[in-house]
Image: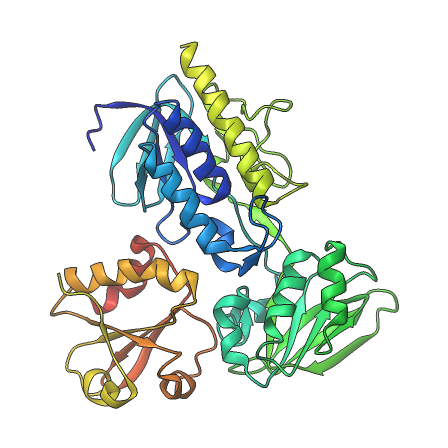
Length: 311
Length: 107
């Protein structure tokens, strides 16, 4: 790729937002370049199983299959897909400069940011130490290794419910540990978890330490109401307490809010830098669904198209 | 291009433990998204560092005995073996520059 060439649009990040932005931008003949991420291509849905709430799939669709379809659709209209990471960006000025993980430099008139989010850690020293030795963030990857084991899932959202349900395929028992006494997960997911005989809930409880020398052997828990501490034996801990926006490359260049989400203007996808747009989980505290990410990816492409037409 | 070759329980001793060069073993499975993402990167490393490090992959579904023996509970796990001993473990899919940094001592 010649560094002299000035591209119309570079999209950073894949997943429903990035791919949808690419579909729209490619159909608008902007010849977008999409950096999918070297190991994160397809985004968070690559680690899920069945997606039941994406419109158009009455019998559900597997997360990775849905991403593969969006990817193909983006490619069909001429998106150039690159399976690499953007490692630095200079987003001020009329021409944006980007560099990828292989050292290629690119210049573009506009950029769509769709880097999504990364899983959140509880923040315990032993959680990190035993990561890969019983502490996991990916039930679909690691559940298999916990046949006939007793597991803990921490979290109260849809991801936690999905992980817990998935893990009962392997585990003898899955305890969902949640710091409140009610869940923020959707009703259908909660009902399913509550109906699963292998799932039990531990309410008003937080994990304060992970126990075990070489592998997880148990958890130290604290009741959030009584402050009472206890220990309980587990063979594994799956953490599903939410996500953080992947905005570390943007610090100091793009206005972010206190939690690191990119700020956009009103209902648009425009950031404070002219020609830079943001969509998907990177901007969304609230909805965080595949379909809302796809919708905002579409908006970003339309905003970029309008911007380019006016320049 | 010499891609990462599969290794099995039957060949593990010969290919990995008795190797005269360091061996990077990729513990993976078909159903693991991050494993599929990191696969092509490992093929590149196998090719670019041929002669220095041997890169092989072990399917944890089919060869679970070895995975259990090495305490694998998360994939992808990348283990480096020198003289039959695990000298380095990398857990999770990482971009190529990050992997090369972790593996620098064996390349």
